[in-house]
Image (cartoon, rainbow over all chains, first blue to last red; front, side):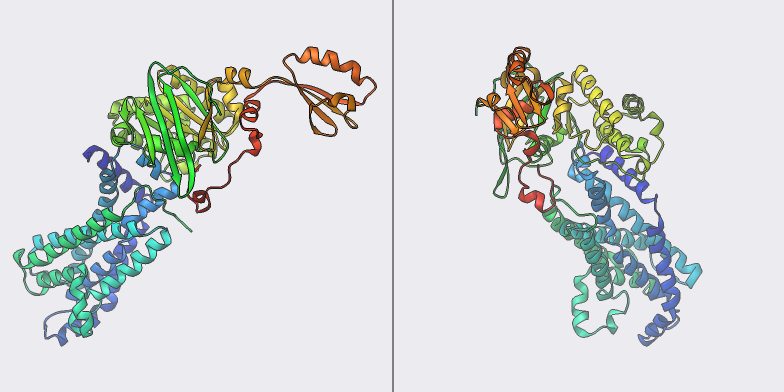
Length: 257
Length: 327
């Protein structure tokens, strides 16, 4: 891997991304709106769990943050399909950039956007919705970063499996949303049916929600979120390994159609 | 069919030997041998489906070969692809530029990937832009350019790092006259600076105007390899073509080639003498035109394959049908 080449691709991807920032803005504004709409509902849910003194943002902010981050997993693959559509994919492959340079350069911007997306939501959660994070801020940052990495790795896996942009959109958005819901970011796991509660730990979103809950509601330290962090790292490694095994650089991907 | 022998180039930048590639049961390349020397332009000529793009894709590492060897500057291009890519400049058949960023940014990105340092890259962008007359376009969005302008930017990207081997695949397809002239001029200049150039095209006239060595690829095989003029001299003779208002006089047939009842083509080494011999025989006939068709690569292709070049497009391969470019 060449740091120079992957950073050249990374800078280029960021530049391309910000020629149309609407998507990045959308995935930040929408969850804020959702939190505003659903905060009271979650306040009732938390009260039923016996958690008094909460206003609902303790669940709504991380829940919507995780949901929209998961919903955006397809963005990690978008730049690959877009390059096929623009005829630049073969051009990149014919350059001295290696496969690793290409993946690092293309996926890290998505990781960065997800980190910013999650970070902004948690940062605005206090002033806008009265969210108080009693636990470790370092733990929160750590959890945000590993969640962004795990979801981007899942995005790469979807990219490896999808042949068309439509498939990427379908698997990425529907699959991402399902992963968020089943992981307990829309409804607390305790309120889900028994079979869903059994399934939930098999999803990265479950571990992210568990970690955020520990930090927000249980005064958690870095050590307290170590298990969720490690689980997310494991998911990221697993998704990356499967994506690497399935990704064929010479495959033709169909941008539209 | 025997391929006319060409002396091996003293310094082959590209050396291809026994290259084979199949897509399913369809053989795109059937044992291709090819050398391109430093400072040499080789026009890779062949109809659609002949295997030109497959050959170029394998040389630059975009596709894998089934068998054979490819060396670039003495390096095994099939095994050391990353190392070899730095020595190759590719302008693929389909234009590939990022439409949402400027031309300069497009050039900068690929220059950086090719390893050019900041100052050298800035200078080189100006040089290449000047050569292709895109200096005024550098700060425009690539997506706002015309097809011909995009084609020039696409070609410029391939030249930034002064590649040892320049691969141009159908570089002038869809290009306007000025773009075509610029690209052909650049091909000559790039070779003059010492690069090896493999220029794939299906335009006969382009190859003739380049006046370079020609490798004719047909159905995955090299059927001719040599200097364009020598190939023409070896395989084709001038043709006298006579067209009549009515049927060709029976006296003229005498086993000669007629395209239809009103036109006759007479291959001859000496068109003037042939005409002098024929004119008395056609006195009184309504002759509508007399043309001397000079020998061309088209005639070479006809002589070697028995098919006219413009009718020679290969059957669509399975890959073509499924939407994957594989010519």
